[in-house]
Image 1 (cartoon, rainbow, N blue to C red):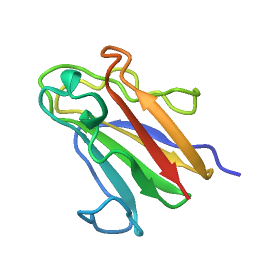
Image 2 (image 1 turned 90 degrees about the horizontal axis):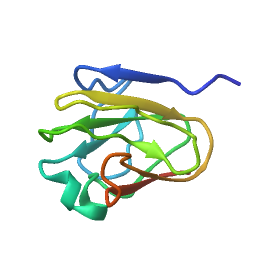
Image 3 (image 1 turned 90 degrees about the vertical axis):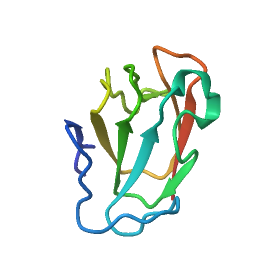
Image 4 (image 1 turned 30 degrees about the vertical axis):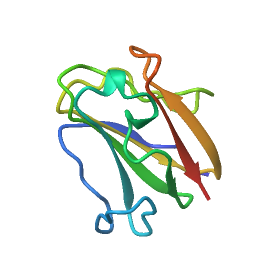
Length: 116
């Protein structure tokens, strides 16, 4: 079984498919945006929230805010480290389950990934 892949990226790139505007991405990847003012948005700080996708899908979090954030799993499954403004972090989910996460810098920022 292969290990999960992570990467810090300058921009979002979907692998093997095209983006869809809804939460389920059948062909490639899922995008989560961290919007302007995210630190005061609570469960809206990551969009979409939750994001639901199939096993083996890469999710990319993109920070469009003017301050740094993280996407840190509550269970230790993934940790973006600092995502600077304009930067991205990607992680491939290899196992079904629900993955709650938060920002280490702003405790009210919460989200979840549902892998089916």
